Image (cartoon, rainbow, N blue to C red; front, side, top):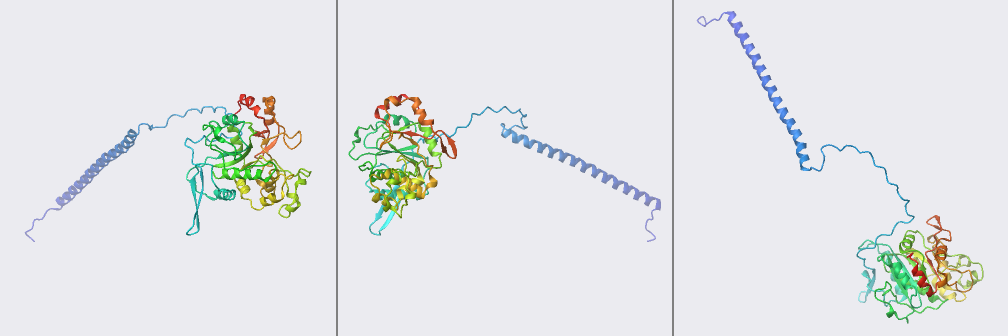
Length: 416
């Protein structure tokens, strides 16, 4: 070890200082390089983040890059008062099929098959009992293959032709798909005179002879109801005669009926000879004299109540057996039935105007000389009643009894 090179202490101190200075320089240079790299990378990231929304806006040029300046709100236009009744739905461009029940019996297994089929014609070979049975089953089918447009069934109970057919043709024009027509005419009546272009063509149902004042009148009413119930879309049912006329246009009447939550059937307790005096004591205990009611034959029913009328098997046989002239079943059966079982479904008023002011067995008849605008407006607005809980002076939609010679002056008035 004596031969090894020995450096003086001042040199060793100088080397240590030089090494420390070089180390500080190296760290300083590393810091400068790192800082520079950080600045460069950061600038690239910022440019990329701003370029991205710009490219997205270029894909959808209709979307503004900044919200448009707010504009002062424009004043709202004055709105007319809403109509009392909404307009009816537009008639469907393609009329839905009329669906009925098809019933077949398998003689081998003794099983009954019930299915929906399209109703091609109103004519059929069913008895009244089978017809009422099928009609009462129709509402139990819940699933339908199309959307229902509510229709009003116009049921005409007539002996022969319709003297006001031109007026009714004008009334129905342009409203196909919102109504159905059913004709109950004497079996001997020849329909060949009716043109195929008429809305009444092919609307005749299987009918039987009707005798005034007998149960055959009510049989005809129930027959009309049952045939109309076979069409699912019929929701309102109005009974009319050949001497009836409409008092308003189709839209007004359609709205009035379809927007109502009650049926229109008059029933009152007449304690006189023409009321309770017609009650037969043999009807007790099924029907008590305190339940006995009288009302107009010309009713309007909603679907639920119509089903109940044709489904009745309890009170109808009692009336058939014990109500004979001078008991007139058409004036008492349905009012008494509804009063006993379904009073909450009725408005207890008729929408068919008639004039009984002269008394007698038949109402007053109006002819050509009576047809004036003032006369019709008096019928339209000359009364007061309740409609859907509100008081109104529009109480009657139809009127009777009109002579055939009233047709010409009625056609000159353009309300339909």
